[in-house]
Image (cartoon, rainbow, N blue to C red):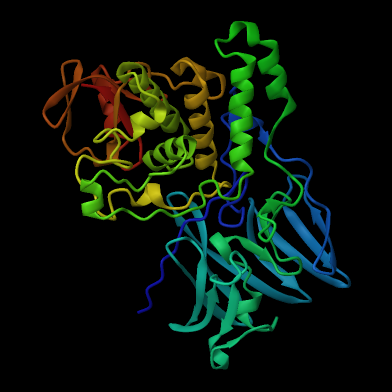
Length: 441
């Protein structure tokens, strides 16, 4: 049985993997906009001239790609709820098969030319091979060309492939599981966004902030504790990170136990913003748990105030965040998720990055509220745990006990405090839904 590691590829806006995860529905009746609502792209790219080809694209009203013309050759895309289901090239259809993971969808297989193929992912999320009936028929090598891998056709005695009829060349999923447009050798990330791996930059569009966001901040500056300089620093730092191809892209290896005992850590050299964002994202990677990530940022700022330390010092404090620096040597598993590459098209990663910017450039935890609403019930909390993993939670009188120890100010982000029996019954109903439990000892 082949060992295939399917890695989660997340996306910006409507897409996961190649920019293909549908955006979560907005809460009806929510009057106040959040910062996530303000993150938009400019108009989709209509045409590109590259590698000697002139390519013209068309999109639907909600920026879902519909077709591509290269000379007389037309490619038609079938997109459902932001997910690219198939493409048709000159009457030949290639269908994509997806598997649902906690963070979103990942393309795990392809139907093409009446055959089914399986994609093999490496730990760094690159597609490294293709299987058919348990036989590896293609390998991708990233060692020479970086983000544009060399294709080896194992059906032709390991010769390098260069044929549009071979599945290894026809398959668009390559680096990070992104969708490669081979006519221009650029990755398509959804919503008309293209990334040039050779220039290491987005071709035209940049992550930006909608005008209403800047106008609102400017008109309310007198009522905010944040200064205009702080707001500009937060926004500029966020945009700078999101437009840096190296930000969050690296996979870090855990140090050895002897190195650990001598004070070395896997995160040595990682920037303060990236490390704080990685910590928040790992503690709550589910896109739907926006409240939890905001609550975790509040916990970090509460600890900054109580410990007299900056954000980097708090998240790297030994035994404070096990996802970064546990009390004991964690080996490879303890910090694995935090050390893995992050996708800038992942909405949870985007929020974690913005929260990191606010933590670094803000003054108090209330500053978070200017970009994300601080969830109901999250105020003085200094601790949190994933509720799914708490097996000994009970309610006695007006207090919740965890592991036989009474906790104070126990709350679910957005629901509020658990201080009565009905609240506890609500809490019991959240098992298995990946909620975070916040509390004070």
